[in-house]
Image 1 (cartoon, rainbow, N blue to C red):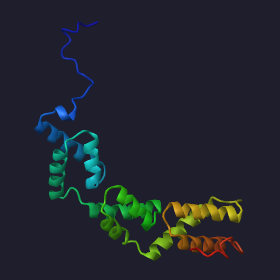
Image 2: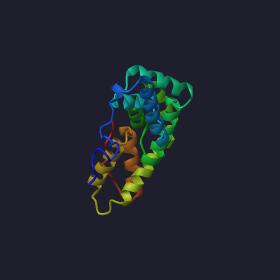
Image 3: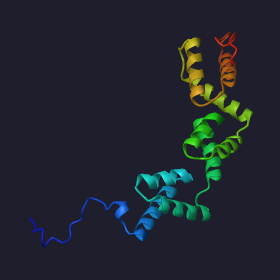
Image 4: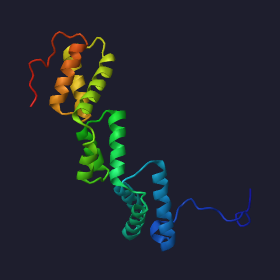
Length: 190
């Protein structure tokens, strides 16, 4: 066993709290954290601000750094929102309403979020809902029409599709799948 006095400096596992760092070191560490987050994927200003707050950085340090990142073009909530909308609509099948809600939770301004989600027109939203229903129907062999209807409507509702659109798409796709009538034939959505 080695003698602790001759083994050299021992590394402490505890990190120095951010509040105890010299100002220049705190700014450098905050910048490093932001760059690491931005390297993984684009982030909103609010996501970066929240990360810095969670790590214990002073509000002044966060504000100054975020301003510099914004000036350098590394933070752009509008561009983030456009990319987010395209990705989540195409990959997850989310409707405009759900996309706006997600963007708002990420700190994107409501108008910016609505404008980005507005890039998805009604026909694209309806077509994506149809694709989702067709895909789900392929996995629902042996399920009665009433249960299938509930599941399909629930799936579209969780993805943010308006009730009227969901009713119409589910009714049409059940008919296309061979149903002579559906539980939605007499239903009129609000």
